[in-house]
Length: 96
Image 1 (tube, rainbow, N blue to C red):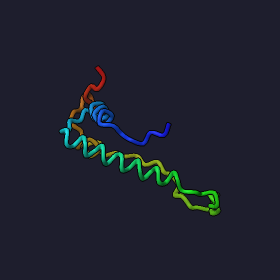
Image 2 (cartoon, rainbow, N blue to C red):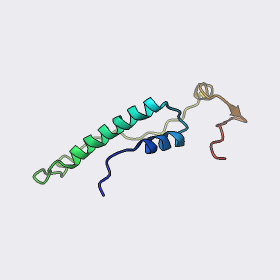
Image 3 (cartoon, rainbow, N blue to C red):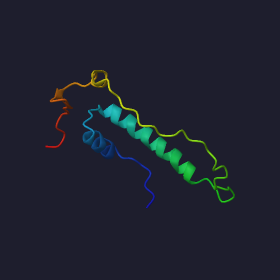
Image 4 (cartoon, rainbow, N blue to C red):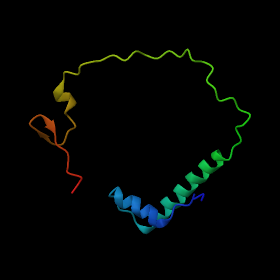
């Protein structure tokens, strides 16, 4: 079954899971926007790529080397943290 329509109930369910509150008007707008996005993906899915070579020719890409850098300014690192406890970042409980 090819399901490409998002229902109002699905939008409300996802909003509830994300702990977001929206008016009925906003929920309807999001439903339309999500259905438009899924419609665009359906268009992409319907494109015939049988005559397109999808192999990667240029494998000589240059990537920067990963380098370990120690960040020593702990005060600057923690400047945006709301709550610290014993040097650790305290976050709100999300699972009840």
